[in-house]
Length: 185
Image (cartoon, rainbow, N blue to C red; front, top):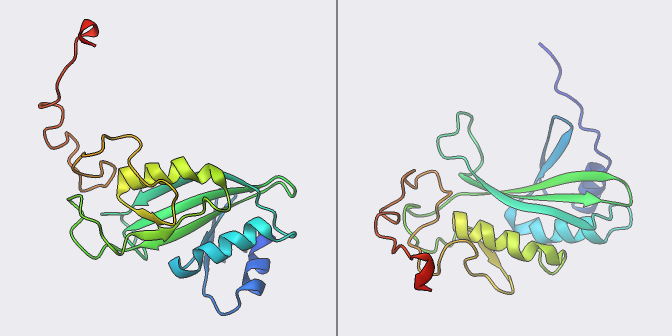
């Protein structure tokens, strides 16, 4: 039996020191450290990572999501929102991850009150469009986002196509899509 690898990312003790009452999960895979944060403390942790002089995560590289439907290993929630952060000052990277569990059927376009996280656009302006993409593709809403609307699909599109319960061939969108000729515009 081998021992679990020791997590030695220098940011982890700083976060634990700043938020001693919060339970975090942390993992390392292929040299990348992920900090799993409770949804209710996400914005506070993100602000700490951005503003604290010992962290200085000044660059948001990406915001994405994952649908763990039918994933072979159990997860704390079906969906996860992931923020990839970079500190230029210390040449460090860390991922923040929040798990969400839907409270209703996910095959439709209905707004699920359990699929809401805080926006980080007030900390990193570059989060605006990636958060809109996560909303559009997964249906996860971002509280306090300045312009949360679809960015890839049309306004009345009836679903969120990157959810794993969305059919691979769609629900007839291709068959009923009006084709335009090059000279018809």
